Length: 242
Ligand code: NI
Ligand code: MN
Image (cartoon, rainbow, N blue to C red; front, side, top):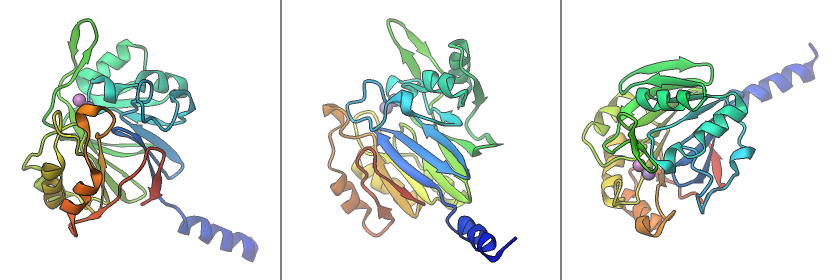
């Protein structure tokens, strides 16, 4: 192996990072270690979607709950990519019945997958597929996801709860994705309090301004977070390296 090859190898190792891209609403694309996952891929019908479902290339799809703005395009994306859906048990079974590959988990359970480590956290919310009828899909969840030594907490849809402090004590969170839209989930004040409990290095607000009902000013959230964490307000399509 020549000097250049060694230098190149060192350089390659040094630039290994986890890239996070916000795709609108509660959807994030996470790339690291040569694998890609997408969380809550609500793209069709999302006025802010930064990507078309057919453009998504992933190894796995993490889904927090059955509501349309989270389950979204998960099933067609999983089928098109031969990707694995990871979801709470009842929702995973629903996805399997629609012909997708799905791995069931439950809150408190963790598993090492080829694409990263996943643990399900509580979320205070509902979970159902709502069409002409309502099909309940178990408990909603949040996700802890770790790849390349970086830990991401995606809260899913939830109100503020005290056990966020436990999550923050147990995990060193590099990035927390927290809903701030109010009405269905935490508003900015509760989400800022959640940052105090979770103690992440970086926080990204999500689940706001997609619809009129969840209109919020993310700058106000950033002001409330203050020096507790680095608040990054992302436009759909924007991302950064962790
Ligand atoms: Ni929901
Ligand atoms: Mn939602």
